[in-house]
Length: 415
Image (cartoon, rainbow, N blue to C red; front, side):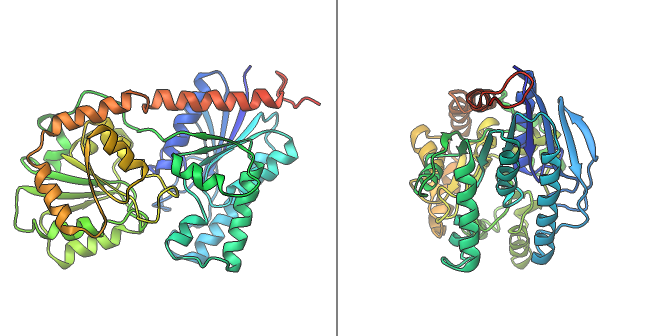
């Protein structure tokens, strides 16, 4: 039975933000199943608000409508609050006046979008699915940006529980996140634990000789340690940055930082302060050349803050695995990433703050059989973590939610 599914999100492709890319993968899979998907999102870029996208277009069969965002800033808090409020109003009315809705799907961007989605779904008497890409106010507490018991914390936690209680299905990214959701009282929603997937296809490894990205950025003949993705305090790079100093005079190694985010200035300040010729900072790369940029690394860095287990999920690990690259993981154990590495041996684990261990790990990886580690990483993905499998499971559960709600073929609720 064809469904009309409304998706609410701040970001969507072609914006390079990971949330938007994952949401599009899901939306495109729903369209392949014969469903109609309508996405409401912002017309401005997430990391670069100066980027403007088409107000309406169809992408892979998905109907995308973007609300006008007069201003948005990730660094100016008053503007960010204003932009978020504007987004909430726009999303509310767009979703409310979409006829014959079968289900409302939403994630964690913009903040509190779940409140809007829950209210609209209640008014329209349709089910709702919440994809928890991260957990707040848990993240704000862990980063000490919020004091437990404060008015703001109480408000955000109340909103969070309202959303969790109202959802028909909650999708958590790993078992640690699921545990954090379960400890909330009176949460009776169905819970699905499903990791995100790589945006890159699991393909034969791209050799350095065939990779134009390495030639363009002076990486030919170098051992490249790459961090690619969002730079944030939740994914600290301090230990890696300190370790880079030990290789300051080693012309055979390059530390490549690709992407953006609030932590990017720290990286660039470190490079400038120490005049590091072995460190290169680049912006986000186009989705179309993602395979080339990811394959340029010999080793990929994945970082997870010590207090962030179950709060965020560094999905960049799957991109590294997809292009057959081993992982250098900075973070705590146990965690989802340490579980993957311990079980499959395609990476090395270093605790935050242990610079000596980081230097030794990088030196050790230079002499390891990286091709074999990369092969293991790809096989681990193929064993059930690939996009087709995971996206298919999510769509199956979404269809089951609508089926249990008892919708007729005309997409109106039963009595």
